[in-house]
Amino acid sequence: MSTVTLVGSRLADPGTEFVYQGEADGCAGCPYRSQCLNLETDTKYRITSVRENAQTLECAMHDNGVRAVEVEPVSVRANITSKGAFAGSKTSLPGTCPYVECPSHEYCEPDAVAFDKEYRIRDILGDPPHEVCHLDRALELVELDIDE
Image 1 (cartoon, rainbow, N blue to C red):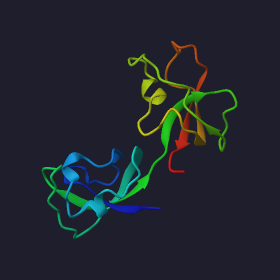
Image 2 (cartoon, helix red, strand yellow):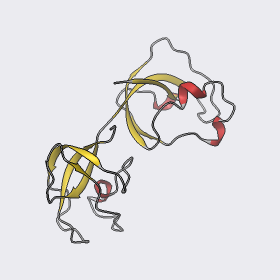
Image 3 (cartoon, helix red, strand yellow):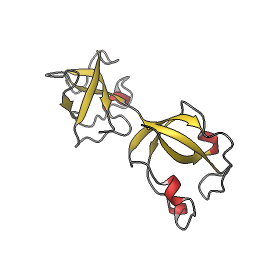
Image 4 (cartoon, one colour):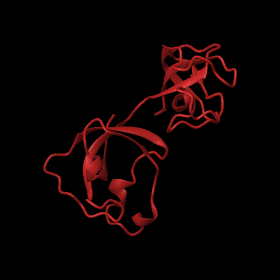
C-alpha cells in the first residue's frame, strides 16, 4: 500500500530508496508537517511515483524544496543465523559486527533494521557475499519484511 508524502526535490525520482529518520529541527513550525512527517521512523521506503502537476513547496531542510511522491516500504537484505531459517519464519539479526571492510558488513548491519526486533523472512537468498565470517557465525542472506 502506497503513502503520499513529501521528499526533497532532488530525491523525488521513482525507484529512489531512503530510510525515514523522523522529524528534523528545521521542521518545527512548518505548515506542511502533517504531509511530510507521516512515515514510520527508521523504515526504508522506495518512491513509486512522483505526483504530476504538484508544486514544489518551500522547505527549511531541502534547498530546492519538497515534492509530493508516493512511497512504499521495502524489504531489506540481511545476514541472519542460518540455523532454522526458512521463508515465513521470524528472525532477528545476530548482532553488530566490527569488520566494516567485510563484503557482508552492509547485510550484517543493514539500514532500517533494529537488532532487538524480529522480522519475517520473505525469501532465502543463499550464501552471504563473504567467504569467511570473522566472528565465526553461520550466516544466510535473506530478504526481510520490515513493514509489519
